[in-house]
Amino acid sequence: MTDRRRILLVEDEELNRMLVKAVLSRAGVDAVRNAELVDATTLREARDRLDDTEVDLILLDLNLPDGNGLTLARELKAGDPPPDRPKPVVVAVTASVLPQDQKAALDAGCDDFLDKPYAAADLVATVARHLRP
Image 1 (cartoon, helix red, strand yellow):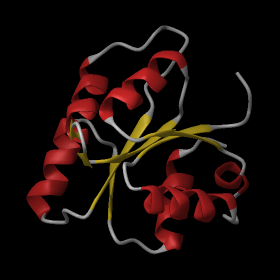
Image 2 (spheres, rainbow, N blue to C red; image 1 turned 120 degrees about the vertical axis):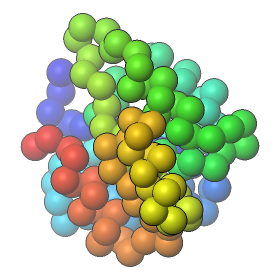
Image 3 (cartoon, rainbow, N blue to C red; image 1 turned 60 degrees about the horizontal axis):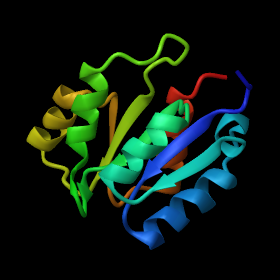
């Protein structure tokens, strides 16, 4: 496996995807700045990307055109990854910031929670915390 990390960004809003890409590409943390970003705009696309691409971290929007991102988090938690692929870290990214929403995300299998709108520094810190050097 390469030292370069891969992030799956599951986000249906183009402006949000552009913002995440810009922030991460300018991060002061090498592992974050050098990570390869893979896009998906729906749950279906996310599943397709995960079928053929090993990722280290998923930034998962919860409100997607074809369903709730927590569905994918539950699938990942319940499933067994191939032996040569560890399960990716899943960070829920949503504007739903009520305590019960955060609990639901963590219960569904998300490893962390980032609420929108977020500061660029918070996005970088969250990603850096979960990417292995």
